[in-house]
Length: 214
Image 1 (cartoon, rainbow, N blue to C red):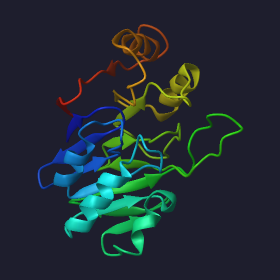
Image 2 (tube, rainbow, N blue to C red; image 1 turned 120 degrees about the vertical axis):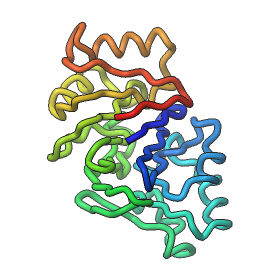
Image 3 (cartoon, rainbow, N blue to C red; image 1 turned 30 degrees about the vertical axis):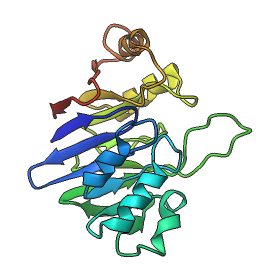
């Protein structure tokens, strides 16, 4: 499977015969362009940095070939108007998106602060190979060969991230959700999570726009 890293939480996953776009949000400058050429879009939760609602609605209104999945709170606004294109999902669901098998894991966004509500959040395991957690440290009860690791945000914490990675036990780590970190900060997180300090698997930092095979 090929992973293409876009800004912040947005990634494209592709293999021969299919591909999906995950979390094209407003922190991803080319989100509208990515959505415009996507066939399958997965949304982990409703926050604006994970879904560019305006761009997604525009694409749904002009392209009957576009399919979108996400928790009800994130995609429910479009389900009535586009019932054949928009599907609400929750923990335990399985489906096929543009040729790729997807399983859904988790239910709630990580806690930012007790004064802020925790919205619905799901993670996606794509093709049994790559897991995108959205904004949560949920541990899927299935093997995760490649784990996409959020490294910045108001809900993230180094110690929790280390314990989460240890619990998931992936063979490979790839950074996402990095936009609030400088290059120095990203390298620092890679050290904390990697074999030099608290982890056993190196964290791969993929520049925006570049790809790697897993």
